[in-house]
Image (cartoon, rainbow, N blue to C red):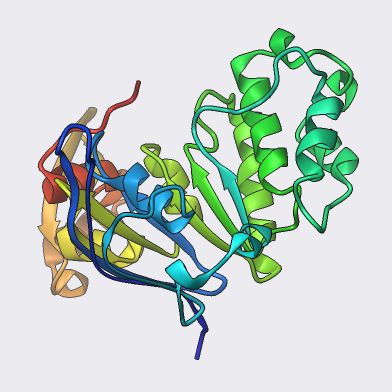
Length: 289
């Protein structure tokens, strides 16, 4: 049985200055070696949840256990276990990339050799440039390196590939997979459903401070999908399409005839995209800003 890394029960939080209740009754578990996705529209409570789990916010209601122990009972040694890569990169713009990493690594007792990781994310030739001269994508990649500086056991990521071209996004996703394969645990927040489908073992949809559903991407697609098959095929020089029920399709004479005559162009199941599931579960559109 997998070790439970975080156990969250009836989590609630209200911002004291404006009285906004960001979280109302949130409960979930995160297991060791799991990539757990927190998904929801802007203002749903994702960032607040991550800030509580990283001990940036402490006046919350409910219970959070980290490895079986109340999170409130941990001291600063807790930060040796976690790496944090929030959406807005935090660097010193008047220092070089190397100088930034040298500064941040002194905050921890253990460190990795970040030079090879900087090479891996395509920043090797720019390591001695001022970060203020970096593009947004370069800052995002450097932010990812910083999150791994202390060789953490748990990685908190917020939009880790946002603003990256496909090639660099692929590098970051591969590194997340490698972290997971080494036994690391990831809590991921993103609006990019391709990242969710590729990386997440389970996802929690949160909106208006409440979790609406928790499941695997595959189970969500099966639950919210349509049990049907759409076939596009040629007939009399024209492309046609027809939808067949998935149940009993192996005995459907019309479907079998289309397959036999060699006119099929494409076949699609009634699988629902995660974007559609997001909208259905949360009742809101995905922001792609």
